[in-house]
Image 1: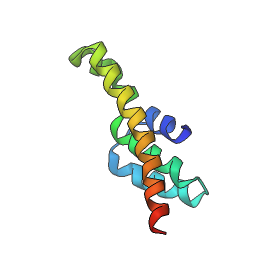
Image 2: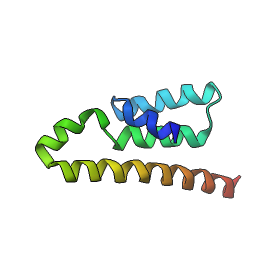
Image 3: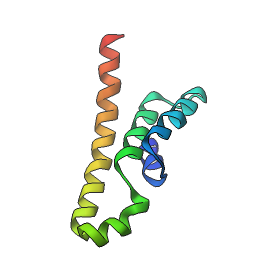
Length: 87
């Protein structure tokens, strides 16, 4: 959850999330948190919400960001479970 929240409130190009994620892993952050961080960084743009609301509408923007946030957590969990199957 903290990884997804961290990715949601940060902003940058998605490629940079891999560098940040690698550094987080080196510091001992769990792979689950890093996966959620990278996924939410790439799909949820909390900082861009006002602009998105202006052009796409409030309901759509909030729904899209909410669904992407929840999905990023689910995909991170499924990624870790998949890795456990093959290791």
